[in-house]
Image: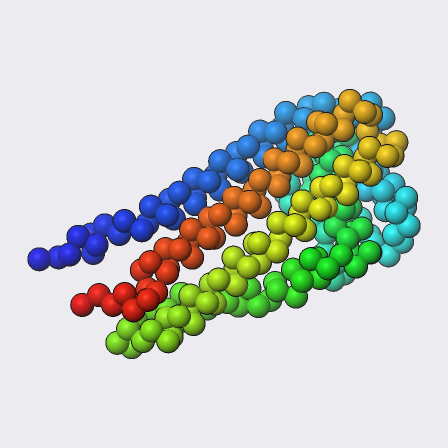
Length: 234
């Protein structure tokens, strides 16, 4: 008789829960951005101009600003000192776009001031990418080789590097948002009434990183339940 777990793996519920959390966070950030993307800033400044102004005010002269394709694909690359704004941000004069642009400038300020968590995250990226890509093949090989627990544990440890990256990312993203809101509050980009709107956009965006960390943790927990602790299935 085929064991029940061969037909339905109850631990897969953890993956489903993680997926639902990620989908909910993504839907929330998109709906929040759309809401405040309809509100044009009173100072009539685009996301690109806001980014350039912030960099100038922070005395950061070695960072470029460019427009890239996509929606909410904004990012800052500390390797080539390039701040990339998506089409939805670069030319928009909305409160949401300016908030997102300021957040990416927050990363540039982190880089300029030598913010330690940002350096740690940059150092972890290649290791985490390799670990997450090799983890499942290593676990599979361990299972095929008579349930070799050493190989399986190495695979689980490799996957845990992805969770480590997600956890290091959290303070980096929250700190960038705090820096952005401080800049927006002190500067002449958004009015006093518009800053809370930008805060809601950045808070929604931050939740996506929290959701990613939770989803990765649930995946790691599933691997530990399935393969950790000599859980050999005969």
